Length: 221
Image: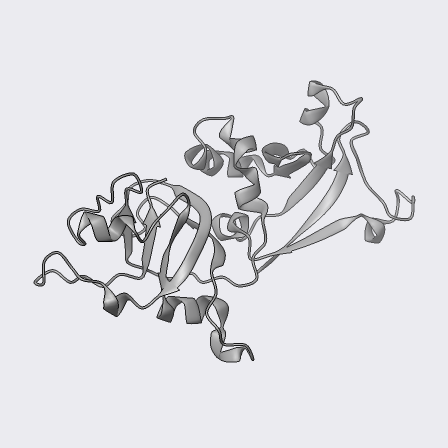
């Protein structure tokens, strides 16, 4: 999955051209990002990046050559898109300041991605509480600040391990996201962190009669 982002100058309200010819659409500075969380939420939309400098003013942020609006930001990278994307952005980031604080999570590209139903155990990384599936003291050891576990089966699919020459298991950085109605949840959620590949057959369940399949263990944080 790939998104292409055209760049524009917010003060001049013009596309940035690599050859200086503003009549040449083929020379617009364009950036390519693959496997972003942004594309998973908006697979059929087009986006662009706005440039600012020390002379930019707040009113300049309302400019866009095609009339699009500011949706997210990551430091000086301003993401613009269609106004029809705004309701979904508001569900993802109901607190407007989060659109800047967490914009990088949506814009960071990944080497691989999967889109499938997974069974996720959420553990309170302060005390190990996890709904009674695993003993709290055991669950506490499997998570940390933005750190969790991924089954080796999911790890293999996510990293396309069978296609790699080096088949050693390693900790991976990840991003995740889902909408309301995905699984049993009723909220939009997103996040990032690190996952260690782990053989979940080693898990000792608190109740041997309730050994639900687990694909991911992630911390509440």
